[in-house]
Amino acid sequence: MNFRKYLALSLTLAGLIANSLSVYAAEPTTSEEAKMVAGEATPAEFQKINDQLTKLDQQYYLKDHENVKRPANVLKSLSENKLDLRTAPDSIAKISGVRVDTEYNPILMYASDPNSWGRHLLGDKDTSGGTLYLTTYGYVSTFTDNGSTGCAVPYYWSDVKKGDPVRIRNLENQTYAISAGRTDFGPNQKYYGDRIVDLGSYWNTQLHGNGMNYVRTYIQILGGNHY
Image 1 (spheres, rainbow, N blue to C red):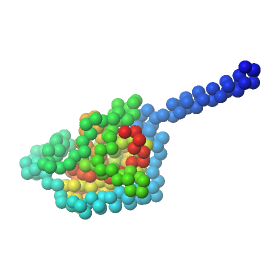
Image 2 (cartoon, helix red, strand yellow):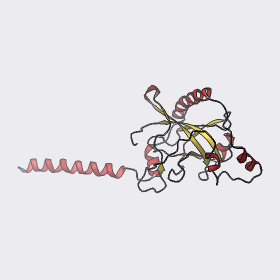
Image 3 (cartoon, one colour):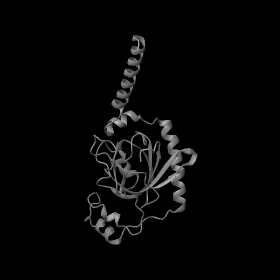
Image 4 (cartoon, rainbow, N blue to C red):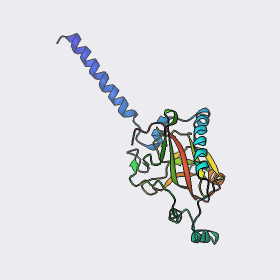
């Protein structure tokens, strides 16, 4: 092999190695890194996605708009201030006959982030227009970090970007539904497989919630090829 051919081959190999290393280095290892890589939804993107989620929400609402009732003993304990829903979510999970899309086999979505236990795409899937929309039943819990407008869902950032709308309907009082922009990752599905969204105090008030309610969520999934 002459010198020119050897040099050309060496440069080619060096380039391939450099490319592979750059790809490896760019792979996010934590939820926060992945959030930065995925980017943030613009107001126009939020509105476009939310229009579709709202239509889906209305379809489900028209099919079944009856309020889900809590058991009498739970209502009595609440009225007497003997039950803290934030520390006793099982009191809601035992509502007779309701559907809960519980995650029993959570995914550690980011290897270096021990709190990034997320969900599979559990729930009803709609692929209208070639885009995947996911409808899920479960519980909303109180979000204690990142201010009163926090909204956390347990999906890859590449699937649900920061600022993407999450449509939530309170099924205990179906008059109330909100659309909040995603801010964070959670709830941790390793410990709370029946919780599908965390909300800050502002959104909880808008939803007329009490810190732990039975809800239905609607989310656009951008990828979905991780599962």
